Image 1: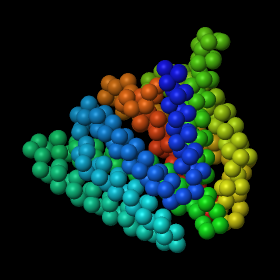
Image 2 (image 1 turned 135 degrees about the vertical axis):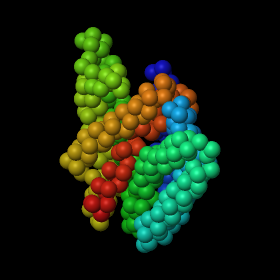
Image 3 (image 1 turned 90 degrees about the vertical axis):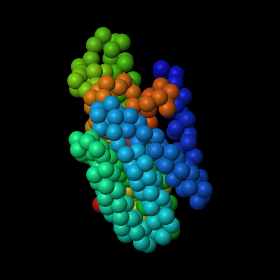
Image 4 (image 1 turned 120 degrees about the vertical axis):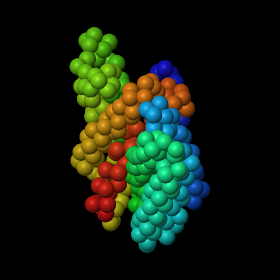
Amino acid sequence: MLKYRVISGIALVTLFGLIVAWESIVSSILLAFVGVVFLSISLLELADITKALGAEIYKGLSIGAGITLIIAVFVSSRTPETALERCTLAEVLIVYSLVVATLLCGFAESDFRTGALRVMATLGGYLFVSWMLVFALKIYFFFNSPEHRSGPYLFFFMAMVAKSADIGGYFAGRLTNQVVGRTHKLVPRLSPKKSWEGFAGSVGLSIVTACMLVAATGDRMILNGHPAITYLTGSITAVALTILGLIGDLSISLLKRGSGKKDAGVVIPGFGGLLDVLDSLIVASPFFYLLLCVLD
């Protein structure tokens, strides 16, 4: 299990590292394509979970709306001066169309209860997975200027800090168990393996990772001519991303436990499904995007 986790983790870091470092329109297209693939698989995994819960998602509508949102973000970013306005307008249109189409599908169901559950599952799934995760792509595409291509590095900072918290928690929990023989459970009902010792490890490694990234790429993360992330703000942000990442992790645990599933899927060896990998980014991405908007 650990071997597969390491291999999968290195592969994902390498993929996104290349996308960030490769300053070309091709890298932007590649990230958008990866986003479409990841989002589609994540929604299919969520559909399996909600089906087990008795509320099957309208997969075509959900995936179609998610893909359209990614395309809207990418196309809007080609005109930086009006990118945010264009994307916001597209987002409203996509959500409105999805709501209307989903309601019409619900009306067509022969069973009222089934229709109501499928409507709520589809709209809830879009909000929880598609809408939340696409903020990560907005960070990549929207926080750039003619002088500074900051978005990709800010995106990489958020992703690495959030995922390093997962790694720190995993190894701190394992080490405590081996040395002390027990850990103090954090949320035993939702995630029996999570502990306070692991949470401390998550915070510690996320802060170290944030400081290392500031040292390595701080001069590339520029907003309004000033560094967007310093050692102090990076450390504080790391703690916030760790807490929000934990909430995202526990939210997927809640869905899995409710549906009787151990993993969200089997796509990533050693981790399970894509939702098991992206869970910490679901809640962390909108926060980091809003933080950058305030700093910008």
